[in-house]
Length: 478
Image 1 (cartoon, rainbow, N blue to C red):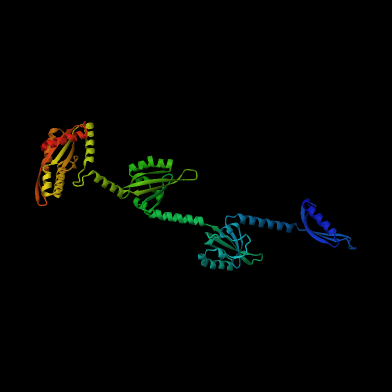
Image 2 (cartoon, rainbow, N blue to C red; image 1 turned 120 degrees about the horizontal axis):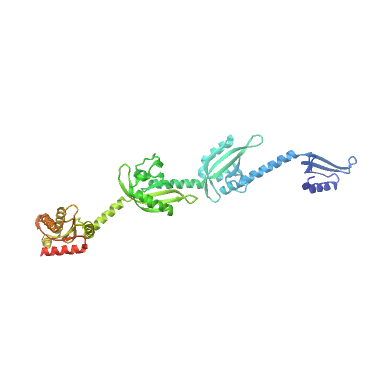
């Protein structure tokens, strides 16, 4: 007898021997002639009081084959239960009435049903109410015909949480082949569905925005363009975006900035923003944009992809230019005001100092302007100032600059004047061009001006030339 079975066998033997007529059965392992142990089914009967026997009768039968099969079945069942318990998918069993009579841990987590051997419950009780109408005929047909079912539906947990699952059932038969139910699995894909829905919403938003969105790989090869990007780049929806050359959609200066400033910043810091200029490859139009580049990292910390978002700044730039023009120009005459005139004078003097030459400043003052204002009115005075501005600008050379300092004082900056003689001729030309009659809504006024001039060679300060020209103008008026 096997050592592990000896104590139990001895106890059974003693129990049988102590009681006349007693009998017992047990299974134990006995040593065979080949040195291996065999499972034996042993039956003992106490016939000590039987005169014909006078002993204990023992019957033994080798049941190793049956025992091995039982052990294999037990191991198989244990393996199944272990797999079912630890499986990441829900496993359940249906009887022919569509009731669940077994569920593994994962299925219970999803649905909130009882332990693994549950009291049979209607499978539809854990299905979302809105999905039952479609699921009932499909499950019924699968159970009736013994065929597989595959589909997607929703399960409702005991906590009311809805789980989107992909389910499958397969027919279950007994030893005779008769259909006894079905075994099913469900895979919870809620997170995947949510992720896809979020991605779909995100893509819908990206496709709807007027911002230009481009996604490239780490090497700058385009992977995705949204609708606004395709329009801005003249690309159709069926174009293979990976074949596009990103450099052809930027002005040379902007592309240089991308390579030398933007991309290194993205690699180092993960983000860059600034202003760039995009070029339409067909129309050749240049669009100023506010540009943001964002890097997404891979698990190793390298760049996975780069998202670029560009916003058209044309309207903003136009408004800025308009506001700047308004800030730098006289509202009444449209001529530059003091600030840009002084800046132009500074630049002209710097050029004269560097390359040689002279810069003339003319101060032009309208004679008897107060009389016109007082006699005809301010509206007529404004009209007279506009006429003077137009005549003054028309008398100057293309590279000269005329402006209004305020009131009836106008200034002309004239670079490249050869000397005092040329300066005198310039002043006479301006005086002649401005001089003449003006129709002021039926009232006629005769325009004359007083002009003061100063000539600089580049060493003077702008304020010095303006002061000298102003003084000369007052001297001429006197």
